[in-house]
Image (cartoon, rainbow, N blue to C red; front, side, top):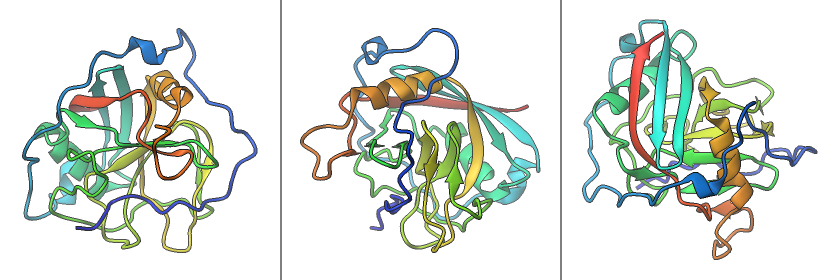
Length: 221
């Protein structure tokens, strides 16, 4: 099975601070115990039609054991990606799935969307890259797809950028399909708690503070 994890190796940014949204700052202590992941993740035979996104903006809420994360999805710039997100959200594909990967050194993202929690899970289909930034810049709050080296391996895994990050462009980059509108402080708190010290790579592995997706809702903006 192909591991849908973006390839590390982007340019290290000088700012290694953790960004957060204005207002009350979340801490990892605000999290409840995460649920057990689904025993048998849902699987599909083909990607949904890109027309589902209707070339429109959509609002989504990711409910986690650490609080809600609000998103805006751009169905005009990334119709296939947003259509897939809508389909998987409405079918409960991500319910009780852990965010299995946090990176804290040079690349600042929280990766979610694999119900198996292994980093190798897939909904059973893949699709190509959309709306990748030509210079590889992924600003704080960016919502983008994770994938393997195969440009057509976009599926169910995605990442949230919690501090400005640059990723390589030589393989086509990574699909930006939205941005965080609320709850970025939650991701920042998870990042501040750090990566599991038992991880094979420093600054890249499961977060110390477990965070799981309890459910995702979507509606047209």
